Image 1 (cartoon, rainbow, N blue to C red):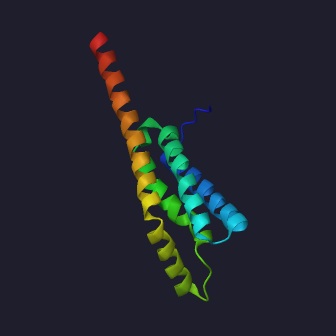
Image 2: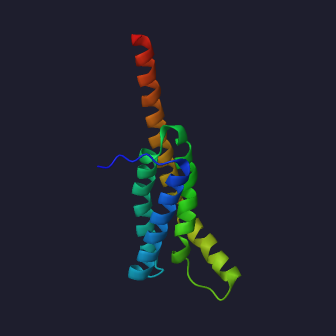
Image 3: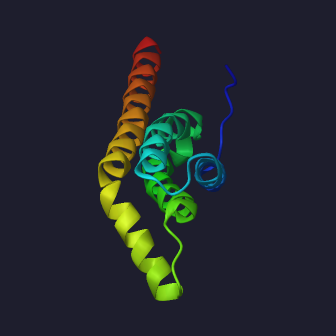
Length: 132
């Protein structure tokens, strides 16, 4: 398993690129159906965990911030096409509202991942200080 360390910006770019790619692939394969939106939500969860695991120690707080943004950008292809910008915006709001469980769940998963990493980091630092 690779062990990259991404900056906060790198984590955001990774998440956005993966989610946009998934959104377009699901639109291509499944159309703008509820099944595609559910599959998009399920695939969002591993992306959240990877963002939480691959972000640098100094940028741990970035992971829970960038994953909801990546979700919103990636769901654009799944929002049903409309006749204008207002209809497209309404379709995006509807897609986000119907997928809010996946969005909150993934964000919570990213937050818990970085929280566990931070606790382990602090515990290691305390043990190292106690040994000296």
